[in-house]
Image 1 (spheres, rainbow, N blue to C red):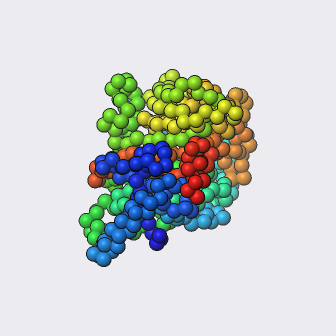
Image 2 (cartoon, helix red, strand yellow):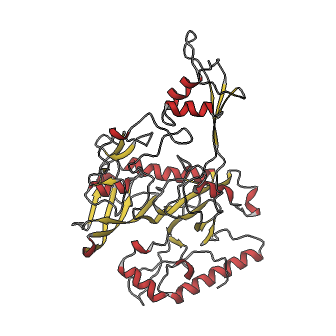
Image 3 (cartoon, rainbow, N blue to C red):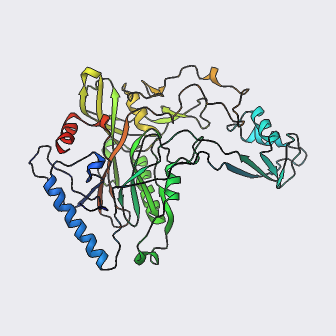
Length: 448
């Protein structure tokens, strides 16, 4: 086959070789599955090849007519990370709350940005010349601020922790892009990861729009943006919007799921008028008794050292959340279970928390233990306001934090209503070997 396949393929409807697998006419099945290099195959090779040939001919016809086929899926992109990032600048305008009191530079930063650094850390940053007041470097922590002064804290460039940089495009059109995110890559800037993110790679890539649509699409953005998040250690499907309209509509799909999670189950039957359905694959500890289970435990925030905004845990006073768990395989000899999880809401770390809550934490999850609570017990003793890191910030906590990787969780596939055409799409991200069933592994070996 020639390069530049569209990556659109029908999925099988039967689990046996030689069976029929007609795709329902209302669905367009999409996935980056056609090349052997991606190690995930359909067992029905003849039908697959015929379909890809027809798509290639359609693309040739569009090219002959002067149009550019845009759904060029199943390719990789990504730029290697620089050794150091570019650093950051944070700007504030000082406003005095009380005209009769004075505020020093160190008072302003140590009181307003306690989560960034301890008192001694801010003193270190000021004396290191990292703060300017009205464009002038100030090294005196006790300088008295004037009303309306412009303050800028210059965070020095640093080497971010190791992270993968290649992203696979599974589906692409004029409105959206579906990526296969590797484990270990953060989606949006936060904490130590300000450059080594999915967003940075989206910004660096040159995205092309068909000439015929540029003048018509006033809401086209300079680059796609993620419309939801995946944990740093979670791999798989990530949806990104190319246009403002697609961004608003896709974001509303995810928000709608979170709202519906708080309703009674008879009010939100599975698949009823839902704009998007997300399915994950996970490897958990222990053997689940029930083939299916629905977890509705609320998720909320608690104080946790090293996480400024707090840690999400199973919490009765938290926000509604719903996960449907289906057992795919029970691995008795390993005391593990392979499960599929459909989430009806998108709370942070929801799957990790819900599976831990029912007594089956993800295998090798460094943070969440049984009950959906952190494994680290003595939280108060690790909190300190004395020591600081080389850049003035807090030392990395000894206990696990949410961004730590190691667990086995993959955003496998989703079904959604296209944000502009209203067609139903199913997009699939190839499974890591550790999350495949025995039958899937056998099928892969046969097709190889």
